[in-house]
Amino acid sequence: MASRINLGYNSPNMTGGQKILLSGVKPTGRPHIGNYFGAMKQFVELQDQHKALIFIADLHAITTNQEATSLRQDTLDLAIDYLAIGLDPAKTILFRQSDILEHANLNWIFNCLTTVPYLQRAHAYKDALAKNQEVNVGTFDYPILMAADILMYDADLVPVGQDQKQHVEYARDTAEKFNRVYGGATFKLPEPLIIEGLKTIPGIDSQKMSKSKGNIIPLFAEDAEIKTQVMKIVTDSKTPEEPKDPATCNVFALHELFSQDQLPELRQRYEQGGIGYKESKEILIANLIKFIAPLREKRQAIAADPNKVKAILKAGGDEARKLAQAKMAVVREKVGLNW
Ligand code: ADP
Ligand code: TRP
Image (cartoon, rainbow, N blue to C red; front, side, top):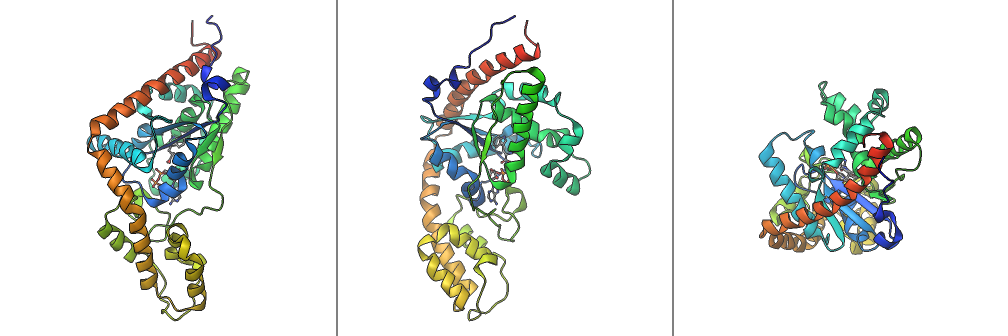
């Protein structure tokens, strides 16, 4: 039997005593300000104090996107987006999920510990079922692949938006189950990291802003697109003079993110009356442009050299693979798959 393998990256020497942070986003279209404030911004802010691994969840993306050319493009685009918001490959291991074959391997091992009724309780599965009777097995198994992503690297913290909280709970349950069935403490229990008080960011139609719903303000939008999208934000039909409730206004929800300096004044004008939705939207447009334009310029510069971006992903993949292979050696021994 192979000797027990010591996972070097768990030792304080390899992580410098830092906690391990891991997250991913699916390459399923242009990221939007909801993705940014809900999750991606935290990746950047936390990369200095943590051992960070951030990946492109392309295996999750193929549960819905089965068009190879667009998947390749969306994957490269997301890598550029990550770099443009400030993820630094010198600090963060950036990689493509599918580049590490071990994820699917661990997913299978976890599948064999997972029951069907347990997965049937997942919100995302129930939503998919409500929309389409013929849900594919990948969508059904989505939380368990995600558990493999997280547990593979002994992640302590998983920064995600509120809607992903249940998935991190599935990862915790899966870690507990493996540890119970095979004995020992092979997997660490991860914690979701969700920004306190951050509401799910509404789209221009007032539903959750989501890449798949066509209701987004893209994070790297052109000025003209910012204007059209903001002007389309759904409001009630109150006149400028009427008092308005900031808590239920979708325009105001975005002011909370982009108009920090003017917020007290805006709130007062909403509550007392004296601001129309058109003016409120114009203020928001100006602030969004101020925020987005520099990000967009940085993105354009990075996009000019796609080979450099691919090389960054390859180097990150090589690093992640070493960690994954070391972990899988432990798992294979536990399960009895090594000789
Ligand atoms: P989408 O729903 O747009 O396809 P993803 O499922 O790829 O987005 O989510 C990527 C990350 O962004 C996740 O951590 C998710 O919780 C977060 N997120 C997505 N939409 C929003 C939103 N409207 N508000 C806050 N966070 C969000
Ligand atoms: N399900 C996540 C989302 O839709 C993406 C994801 C896949 C992920 N694997 C992960 C997030 C592991 C955090 C950790 O956004």
